[in-house]
Image: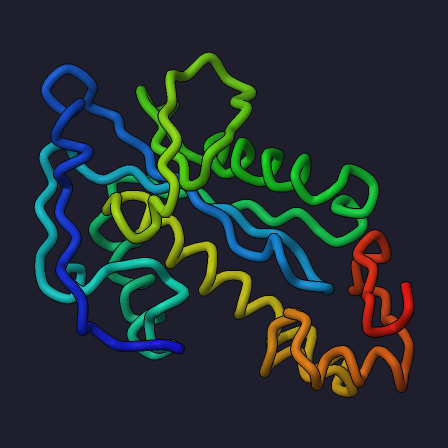
Length: 212
C-alpha cells in the first residue's frame, strides 16, 4: 500500500551525530532485489553539511510507502537539494552471473564511485555491506524509513528503476512491466507461464508456481 505524507517527518538526526567531525555523509540504498526481471539499481546521496529538510523534502520517507507522484517530486527535490548524488544500474545478466546479493553490493559501490567527490562516511540501508573503497560505514536495518540520507537514496533508486522498467514495457508489452515493475505478481507469473521468459528475466530466479 502506498501513502502520501501521513507519517512523521524524517530529520537528519543520524547525520548530526557525525557532521561536526565528518562533513561528507553519504546515504546509500537500492531498489530491485526482489523482482523476477530487470536490473537492480542503487543510489548514493550526499547532502550539504548540517542540512535541514525544507519544503517537500519534509515528506521524504521510504520510497516503497510513497505515492508515485509524490515519489517523483521528491526525487527531483533530492537532486536539487543534495550536494552530490550517484546512481548505478546492474543488469539482469550480471545478476545471474554474480547472484543478487553480490550484484547489489556492486550496485551500491558503483553508486558511490559515481559521486564527484569521495564521501567521508557511508550510511547504508540493510544489515550488510562490503565497501570497495576504504570508507568507514554503518548499516541501518530499515534505514530507508529512519535515516534521511538513506531515504533520499531510496527515492532516487526506486524512481530510476521504475523509469527503466516502463521503457522495457514498451519493448516487451506482453509482460506488464509498467504495472508490476518485474515483481512476482500473479499477473507477471501468469505471463511467464504463457509466454515464457524474455531476455530481461533473471534466469537464476526460480518460480515454485511453475514447478521450478
